[in-house]
Image 1 (cartoon, rainbow, N blue to C red):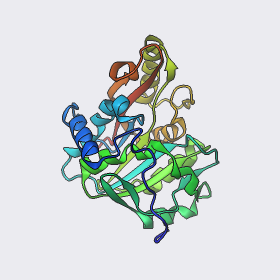
Image 2 (image 1 turned 120 degrees about the horizontal axis):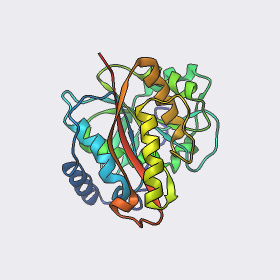
Image 3 (image 1 turned 45 degrees about the vertical axis):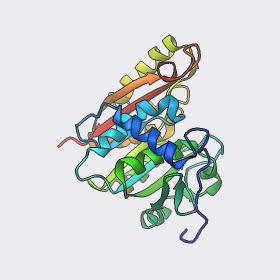
Length: 266
């Protein structure tokens, strides 16, 4: 992987500003406006639409990370594949990742260790256009400063397969785990609130019944995180739960967004 071509920004100018100055301004404003939960957390679920839509909800996660002392220095980031169908979990096969805010180094050693898992392989085309990871990166750059990244796109993978990979990457206080997922799609706001509210209830309860794609587009990485949460006895809580009708969209056809925190219980 070292020496391979960088993964350049694919959705800057669409999901977020392409200008460094504009992007820095927008992300900083979103973080400043977020209510940061001061409780510690090891892992989060965070939405991944355009910043104008899901940014205020996502910012609740990143504002919490920005206030942490010391801040995490490694980020394990998982998201669903929106463009490429495949089985298993995809590594990018390139390094570094780039955004308008600069370059992000990858934890190449950690990703090399994942080669022992049959469900993990390099698949650059799964990463090339994928926004579910990319939209998180400017927030991470602003909130954490220096960190290394383990970016994973999840295809058709069982919860246990995702959970085993997460366990291998879990680490200690230096590592934070982020799962990128939106919730329901293209429903009237009132209907979406009911469905997303039930999905949130199941996430907080660490329900063992897997979520499906109608409930969360990132259901596969979410289900994997929930399995780890059950194995490790984590507790989960809602940080924010809204939809695009609450932020910048049409209330007749919305996308649901939730931010959730998972805490290790002493």
